Length: 417
Image (cartoon, rainbow, N blue to C red; front, side, top):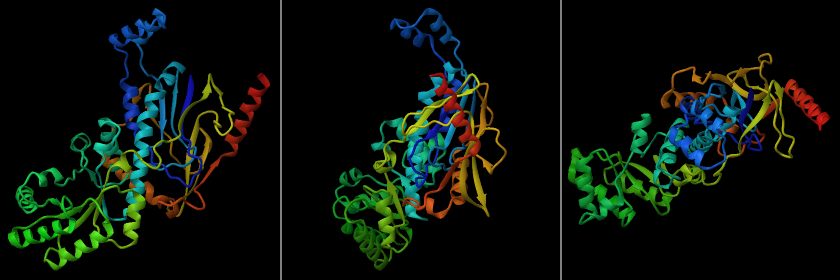
């Protein structure tokens, strides 16, 4: 049996990560099979013995998995997931265990930052068209909702996961009508509480036409918002708010989109822009400023003995571990990476989620994951919940027992070489 550990390799704990995608990894482990077609293909490669191909036909994952619950923030080098299984099973699992966790953790971490910048304003995922594939867009919508965004424009994600759906009209709808005013009138008739996109031709002119529509329809006018999608969003929001208020449409909210990320949103909020919500696309689903995560999956024990790597800047802590979150007066103060089985140092985060290849609990809804993520974020120090790097960083310690075990394993390995 071996233990393989997946952990975040970010270099400092001023960066908060929000693990997501563990459920997809567990689903893969529970259901993975080699079909006869797959085995036949492998046979054509001329690389594998018949006995191995026959073994693949009965392949099942029968190991144990320990994981930090999805939505629980983690920090530098902390274990997210551990696999305890025969080496062939654990090694085979590596790629697909890592991939869904990596992609969704990236998006969830970005989404948490975007929502932190927006404060109590609504933020919606608009990223499907810019995602690296349709499946990535689907999983990004899930991760973003778990991390705190209000919903998505991805209808399939709404159907698949029960995520609230948001949408506005398209520029093409406006362009297909004889005039912008005619497009607004037709769309508001079909969808009375909709959001009207006002920047197809001239943004403030579009806002003026919304005001005119409000006067035309009178009490039956119920448009919820206008959407600004280009230009100087601060200036346009200020001027649009004035036009709406002076035109008797003060109930119409302002929604902004177009190249937004957490820094841009934070700047608009800091300046007091009268914007009620944001749509975030490309920068969210591809995590544009940090498009990769140094997630690692390493062998940490084999045949009951700890294993390490001693490569520079790529250390591996040996053996099974536990991650403890130390709390004081209802707030997290620091974490400890310890050996599994050490006396309780705080709240243990790694829990057994799979035994003998079967999940132990029912699949959690995205609503339950979202609620956990909100609770766990509220426990963190304020400094690590902001978009700026925490100074000082959140403290992550390695227990004395684990440090000593690491030294023993390194010494034993050195004496054999």
